[in-house]
View 1: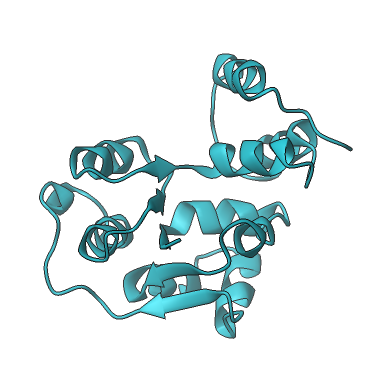
View 2: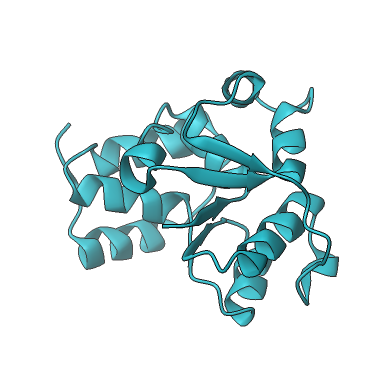
Length: 163
């Protein structure tokens, strides 16, 4: 399965020590070089920079795509590159959190999932506790989501998982 990832999902999963769900679920994940640069930026969180200093074998870095997908001109370079790479490589899934980026990706015909979707999927497989992961996500990072969205996701997916 070809999975492309933007900076935000990688960052949030690294910050809450849940990045290992990515290779467990997908085998390999590809990021464009622009995302790798964002992850290594001096202002990026140390856990994210540490992950990218010597990328694990499951995290592949692709060269920049020559063409940009329609609608990406209003996005930041990492988001635009991730969407463009996913479209170019006909990825089955794009991991991205930002609302506008998700909309552009969907308009391009890409399937998208975000940090919460990855955590819910992992919890439904018994790999982690959804509630504990969300508690860390909301308490240890600047991630924002309404309580209603979390409750709806919890009911819809039937997650909670082991503690």
